[in-house]
Image (cartoon, rainbow, N blue to C red; front, top):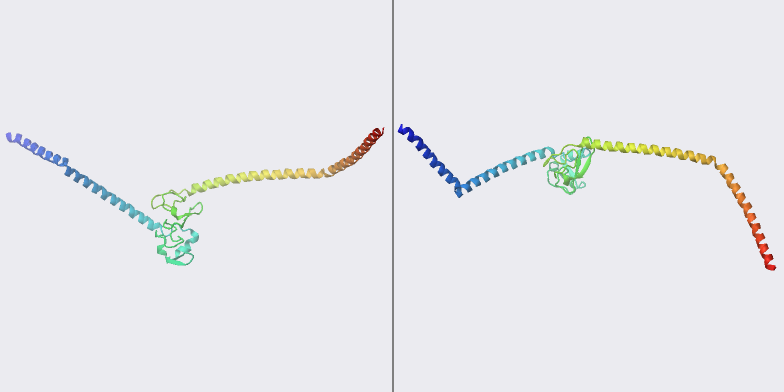
Length: 243
């Protein structure tokens, strides 16, 4: 009986002693620093693993789209051979160097799908809408310039809004077409009105000419009478002066 009572007490004492020693260890500055360092190292390893994973995914994505990226259909033949000619035909490079994120040609034509060349041109295919060209310096700048999102994809994703853009442009074109047709109809009505007025005036021409002739005749008659009156007045003045 006495042994059964002592044993729990001994176990409790041992546990208390071990717990006290453990907490004392945790409270010591060296142990705290060690725990903090281990936590930091673990956090750095996790960040490095995540960074490497993201990098590998980006590289994989870049490799899958880079060779034909930014090249419009009408230039496919130029980029399809084993060699690529640039700088107005003065330089030839391997086609493997096209879109490798390094500017090999002075005209920037070897990097249509990257921002490596400041003077390059990127073509947005924009299926369902219309072809658009932008400076290749805007490629992968995390701003969506192409409605099909083809200028991005390495650092960020862009939704394809070409159908919406096409619908907006069609709506605006319909509005302008309606306004043009309305204006054209008004113009046609105005032309018809002017033609009618011109015909009316033309039909009144002889009558108006006769009226003009009558007025000119009256003018001559009145001019003669005025001249006679002037002569009478001058004559009377002369008579008064002689008296």
